[in-house]
Structures are given as C-alpha cells and as structure tokens.
Image (cartoon, rainbow, N blue to C red):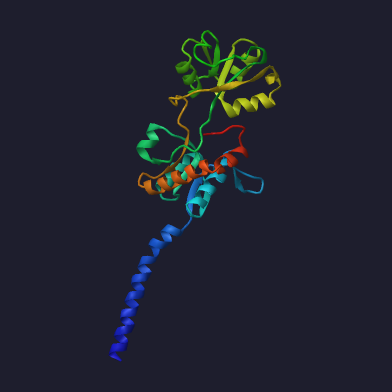
Length: 261
C-alpha cells in the first residue's frame, strides 16, 4: 500500500510537471493577434457585413500561412494601436505604418511590405520624353506642400522650379490649367484622379520617379515589440518567399495597378 501510494504521488508530480510545461507550448500555438485600424481601403477596412478585408489583411494572412501560425486581426483606433501593442494586447501592428528612425528606436520593424511609388503626371500634349534631372531642367513641377514627394522633387530635380500646394488637388488643377508642367505625387492617388476627375481628361501618367535614396520614404512595415526579433525574422522570410513565388504580386493585383515593391 505504501509503495502504491508513493507511485501515485510520484505520478502526480509527473503530471504536475507536464502541466507546468503546457503554457509554453500553448504560447507558440496560440493565434497571433494583429492590430490594425480597419478604416483605410484598400489596405484594411470593414465590409458592410463587418468583415475585415484589404491588401494588408490578405498579405499577412498569407504570411501567417507560411509560418504556420493562426492569425487574428483586431481593430483599434489609430491612437490606440501603439498603447495596445505595448500593453501586450497584440503581437504586432499591421496598419500602413511608415518606417521611420523614431520607430526603429522604439520597436522592431519588418522589412517593408509596401512602398508607394512616386508618379509624374503631365498634360497629354506635353509629356517629357525623358524623366531625368537633365531633361527636366527648367520644367516646372507641382507637389503637395511638406510631403515626401515635394522633398523628392527638390532632391532629384534641383534645376526644376518647384511649386508646392496645400492640397494635391490644387496642384493637379494648376497642371490642368497649364500653370505648371508636371505634378508629382503618390501613384495610387494620382491614378485615381486620372480615372475619376473630369478635369483630368487633359492629362496622363508620364512615368514613375526614381528614388534610389528613398527620399520619399522606405515604405510600410509590420511593427513588433522590441524583443520580438524572432517573429520579425519569420515574417521577413515568409514575405521574401511570397515575393519569389508570385503570391505577393497576385495579392497586390487585386488592389493596385502597380507593383508596390
């Protein structure tokens, strides 16, 4: 009886030991919680049925499938994203956050998963044959004031007169009215203007603006807590694979008329 009782006690200790080890396994297997402000189509937004959809949703779901982790998205207002991450209420933020030096100091950032190309738009009868600094010397350019695209125009085309405007539409209207020769801005917004605005019938896309020094920004990154470098490495490797096998391009084509990387 004593031996039997001792065996039961030891078995109980073994069970307790196994029970104590379970949370570590569960921690690895539990879904990753991804925080986003689902109010910005086409990146992340809610349908009429309350379903969260968009480019970032599709892309990160594909990344999660590659790293074999279940992922769930949780909506947060923009000013609650960072506090929620730091409070442990999510594992990462996926919400069109730019890569900046300040964010690098405070967080671990993924490799960029989206870059907004800069585009030149010109009037149909005055499209430049080349978009080099030499070819555009003395060609006037309009841009949104204090935007990265204004900085890009200033850096890349120092001999081109630059006019800046409170809004992009004001720059576009000056182009349509023949008061400037080109406008520069983000490709998605300008292509949308070309497709939808009546006054844009005057104009066409003249071509992308090269930005080798990333003056207009490095792009969007997934934001992790500082200690989550291991998770960042998994996300980066999965993104690289999605780029290589064409999955990234297929997802991007659902939402954009251009390759965002």
